Image (cartoon, rainbow, N blue to C red; front, side, top):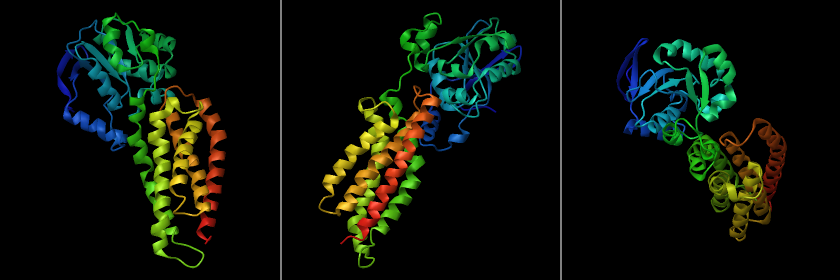
Length: 344
């Protein structure tokens, strides 16, 4: 099937190979934007196989990619001006780093894809360039043994490929350094919003309507007066655990994401405490001072799955400690809030 990013074909011994554009069209950018908001995320993938950029020959380098289209787009864009082959693995639409952890970006799939594409007939060398973040799933020795191709690890970021290829496929310490910069963190916020928005909406409705209960009877006017504060507190907790945590991550106290999220939430909770002193009772004030940091801490832990400097064992250890504390704090906060409903 011809895709909108195909610009032509190259005839080889194995057949015609699609040439892909190295600049992103409006459709590409729209698709990338949509997937950032989790729209069509599960279907945003490229057909596994082999592709080309420019006019590659038998001695041109072979780049290995996941078939998550966002990863593929970043790679082909970084290869502007270079004649290369792109070997796309079947990672089930998952990015390189996550697929390496799951095993779909791994030794067996690389060997299988080399065989199925007939790569030995397309190039006259025996080297493939694998992104560094794919290393956890790849055994270079096993790939060499089973396919005859040597594995060379490229830079962490696709944007460094131009310098990497221009320097004779040599990486610098900077290229090998894994970073989790603000631009990387901010890109995660839309997905967090989409994932939790339905829960946030449901909780907001529950807290808003429940705010009408009191020591005398249910009064909707009371729900408006105190329910607005409850909804504001929920939104603040969500904002704290996602946006504030993402922006201030390197500067927040603590090493674990749950602790950083706690401090972001504590600051937000204190502001709410001061603002709400004249609108809600003390039980509600203290309830949200406990709830906001707990919710923020829980949401902040989602960054453990997106950051490239966390480990599976470290994440498990953090969750084992943090989740019981978060759950206990949320329980205490909810109990205090319920008590506050019936205090005159």
